[in-house]
Amino acid sequence: VNNWSRIETLVPSLKGQQVLIRGRVQTIRPVGKKMAFLVIRENGYTVQCLVQVQPDIVSIQMVKFAASLSRESIVDVEGEISVPDAAIKAATQQNVEVQVRKLYCVSRAVPNLPINIEDAARSEVEIEKALQEGEQFVRVNQDTRLNFRVLDLRTPANQGIFRIQSQVGNAFRQFLLSEGFVEIHTPKLIAGSSEGGAAVFRLDYKGQPACLAQSPQLHKQMSLCGDLGRVFEIGPVFRAEDSYTHRHLCEFTGLDIEMEIKKHYFEVMDVVDRLFVTLFDSLNQNCKKELEAVRKQYPFEPLKYLRKTLRLTYEEGVQMLKEVGIEIEPFGDLNTEAERKLGQLVAEKYGTEFYILYRYPLAIRPFYTMPCYDNPEEYSNSFDVFIRGEEIISGAQRVHKPDLLEKRAEAWGIDVKTISTYIDSFRYGAPLHGGFGVGLERVVMLFCGLNNIRKTSLFPRDPLRLAP
Ligand code: ATP
Ligand code: AMO
Image 1 (cartoon, rainbow, N blue to C red):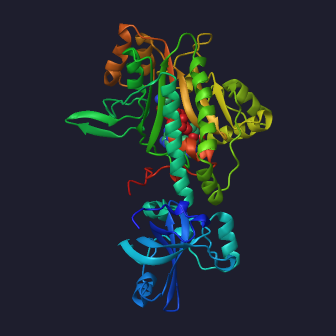
Image 2: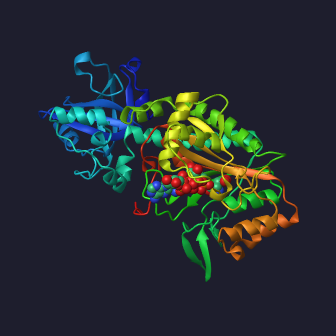
Image 3: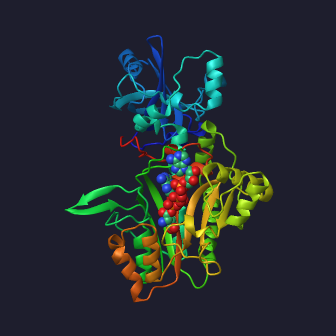
């Protein structure tokens, strides 16, 4: 047999055919000396393989060899498809068995794995049940998962999560390209902080002080000064956060856009609206199997969203919170708890878990944010977007007047010298513009109702973790 089959494609109608598969050994069950069952896994699909002594085909040594394999080793199996009766059907997705004729170990795993994949794949309900039944198993904690991430990634839920994440990036890119946006790649080594504040990784750039970009903010705006019109970027964002929370990372993937506007920053919010309805629809349509795999380990309700995204002003949000006894300091920020509560209130009142809050107080927005035309001292042309009561997007119209920009940066305590080329970019005629930034890991975490951003970061970087 020369043709490789994927385990996913092995179905009863192939009965009697010879197949060749490659996969990982998930379990090994010897039965006496003449027989061994192997469950082989590929891409989350499993099939049972029977190695049984048969004159001239399968020797007793081969059965012994099969029984001696270690879990997670990679093997090639050649054999005939059979359809076992119900009694011996294994707990695999495929209702067929492979009667093994040849078995070859491609890569052997060490015998004592730090993580047992089947244990790592259990849901809380399954863990409870196993505990009650006195079953022997190990609860795999998050640090162990992250320390041995390559093993942890092999669970069906994680296979789902990173395929969903890939689809989010893909849907983001496809949608924006279809709307005339240009994909750009801005520098990650820059001279000064792009967002203000202290959360910056500093480094030495051939003798010059430099830092890792906290966002593509400065250069995506400068690209518009260079007449690129509408741009987007998918790239790394570095924040030297001291945040030990479920939703902050020191490095994450930013999905950023910046665009010219004719009149109003609502034109940017219109893009959020169309983009995310398209993106959520595409996840629901194209990632059914992946969402199911995540849901099986981490149960969650499908995200409720409207065809036209709900928009509330920041003050309307504050008022809703006030009505349930939560007071927000005037022109202050909503803390995590208030944001969550508002998420609940909005879901109850409007039936959506995805919404935009706009017209934020100026004092709590970054220096490059355009003040409101009708109340420039107190409010700004800015917005945040929430999924299930947690922020996934910040966006705004930007200040395109260099003098005001300089004044605002100074007021923020930014050393204007470090961003002088950025400010100068607006001196040669600058378009009206706005944009937003999305955190990729947060989108996946919140769409899937997960409780920790580390679950949706391939190799997470937080204040305590720089490896693996
Ligand atoms: P943005 O940078 O756009 O504001 P963000 O979601 O990271 O996005 P932050 O301003 O960092 O928001 O924080 C918003 C809220 O998150 C804070 O008001 C605070 O309640 C909470 N928060 C941030 N850092 C921490 C922390 N280290 N511990 C507890 N809560 C935190
Ligand atoms: P902001 O700082 O709000 O805005 O970041 C944009 C989005 O990025 C995500 N995010 C994070 N994700 C994981 N870990 C973090 N530490 C973290 N911090 C932020 C959030 C957030 O909504 N330049 C602006 C965007 C703009 O106005 O275009 C900015 O960076 O999902």
